[in-house]
Image (cartoon, rainbow, N blue to C red; front, side, top):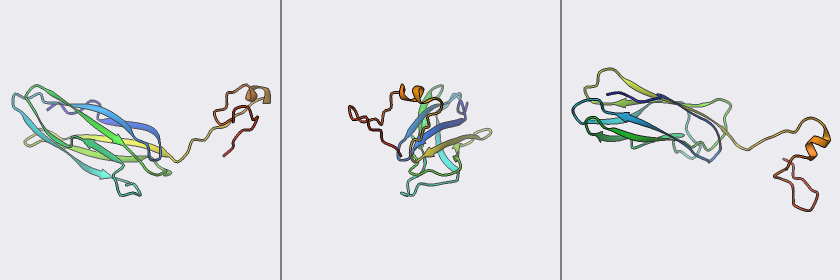
Length: 141
């Protein structure tokens, strides 16, 4: 069993109630088919809606000898928090030599925030996506 490459999945920054996915492969290097299960070892946070922040699909399957299977991991937080969301999963294969883990992390923000600096003339030249066309008004948060 070759494990995963890479075994650290960093999802980066995501807005609340949005999802980001990463793919990885599990490769069977043996001459026999293997069955695997991906089980959570450490889940530090959950969503307010009761759903898991990190999910994996398929969580279990059989991989023929010498073949690979693509697995999709998703990061779907529903709220911002001060720290990074983190989780650890174990790839459990009967009779395996050694243990294989996947570590996941991601950060969630409730809303986008941006700032302009510098001279007023330079700021006025920026195309503001919150400007109302033809009105000369700009929305602020």
